[in-house]
Image (cartoon, rainbow, N blue to C red; front, side):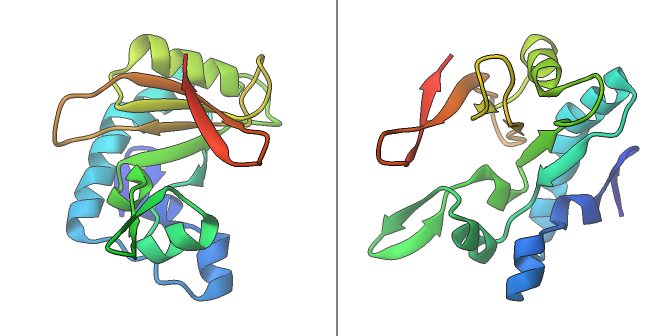
Length: 163
C-alpha cells in the first residue's frame, strides 16, 4: 500500500526490533489514515523538494514496540501508556546521514522553514548536524510548530530544549 507517491506503508512499519523480538507492529485503520496525512503534509513535500530517497529510521510503532525501544511513555494507574506520536502514526524519523546532499541539517531546515508541522526535533548529533530528524503531524488539530533539540543529561536521560 502506498501512503504517498514515494512512501509505502511497509517502509513506515519496518522495524528490526519488532522482527527480532516477535512484536506485532500492525497499525489500525486510523493509524494508517494518520500516516497518509503525515506523508501528504511532511514526507512527500520533503521527498519532492530534494528529489532523492529519504530513509525512514523509525515510523509507526505499536505500544509494545515503543516500550521495547524505550520510546516516550507515562504511567497511568501504574500501567504503561505510550505517549509517542509514532504510536498514533503521526511521527517519522528521517535520516540522510552518510549521504550526499541533502544532509540531516538541510532536511531539518527545509521542514522548519517551509512546512506546517506539530513537532520537529533535532535528534542528538552536534550543533552542526543532527543524528536524525524527528517530525510529526497531527491531522486532528492545529500544528504546534514546536522545535526542539534532544540531548542526554548527566544521568544519560533524554531531555529536550526549545530552539
